[in-house]
Image 1 (tube, rainbow, N blue to C red):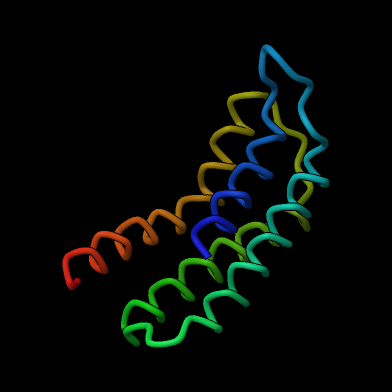
Image 2 (cartoon, rainbow, N blue to C red):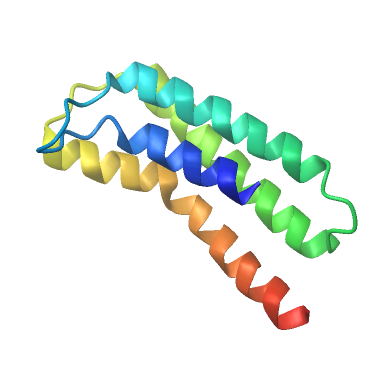
Length: 109
């Protein structure tokens, strides 16, 4: 699941211009993000023995990121570099909770 979430983040951030590559179209980046979040949710649902509280925190984080992504997709704003970075950061922000879950799992082990 964590690998899919990282691939989702990478897909979304690919829309940001960088000095060594052309940015991906925002629509394609959002689509890749949402597809990978869907894969992460499927992996989460298959996670046997997951502590219920941590499972719920992961599910909530992924679903919130997907909701924000859908909102961005439906709004389809025209953004300059700084605005794009801020908006994409807001979309990705709920996924920060997954790092907390990893720490909690390690603490419980």
